[in-house]
Length: 223
Length: 223
Image 1 (tube, each protein chain N blue to C red):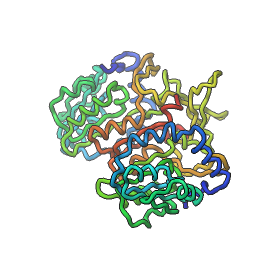
Image 2: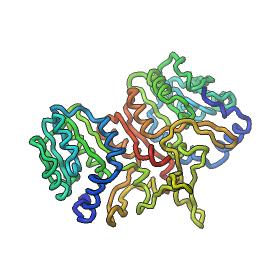
Image 3: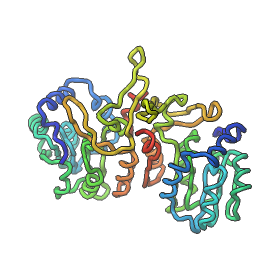
Image 4: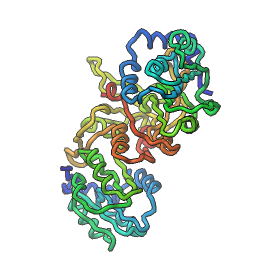
């Protein structure tokens, strides 16, 4: 089962504060790139895996999606979504992404923003998604960059010069895939490190045609 | 034009000594992985880009290839190839990989071992190769890992603990693509840094189905 850290009170408060009130990587880096790659939502059946508080589901709905299913493991997130990001074509459901195999629908687009690094079994996840997609369907997802997830215990770090400018990044353990557990607002936030080659090869061997691979993090931060 | 560093006397001597007489990454890491991904050579028309002293061409020939064309920019390398790795089905030709568009043949397999990081124009290279491949043809190539090519002036480095064990890797400039010039036996050895996303996306947009992406370097060295 995927860790449900978003239902931790302290984590949830800090995370929502970050997303709604502070400058964050999502708004400045990840979301702009995702929106560029986004296919037209009009008339589409869309599944949003790890939908969080529902802002992307609402975006799809307002752009003409026929139906949007938003799943998340966190009740707190879904409560926010149902309260502030509701729409007649959206269904919010509590579901661990490890249980996608229990869904009976099919989708034109499976979307996921920064959730897949929480998945323990990536081949199973990709396989489940492939089965849920209609012919010609698209998977669009983002995840933490493997260079960032690599280091055990979050000890990967940016190095700064005397002026505080970022000059390099130090990391380790890239070749050791598997669980990482680190501090992000609270202790023991778990995610899973996988090499880029593993991600691409898993997608390809499942049947996906990998069309675009966009790296945003290092572009701005590892300079 | 691609730099012809292999015809530099000092570089050539040191490189041949490395490949023929010393433990090297090619023999322990790169070549084993490449051989695992290698399709059957039997009856195939094969192009080896940056064939060097011809050991791979000879391998293809001895495994039943119908015809092997080995191209390299270095006369010194080709002299070695013609002297020690000749075979009736192999043709060695001096050619810059930037000039592949002048070839009129077609191939079942285009192979390249650790040469593409020397190519200035990757989209043009991939486009030229795509045009040379027969339907169902395969491109199998290796190149330096982008984490290693990233840092300007070769200042990326492994960090060691008191026992001399490698504990981390420090790098920078990952998001800044383009020429790098560093020391490898001699000064000003040029190669080109491209992000992993750029490599994968360029291949996909040209028409290639990316089937496997294997990372060998960090597996052993960034631990």
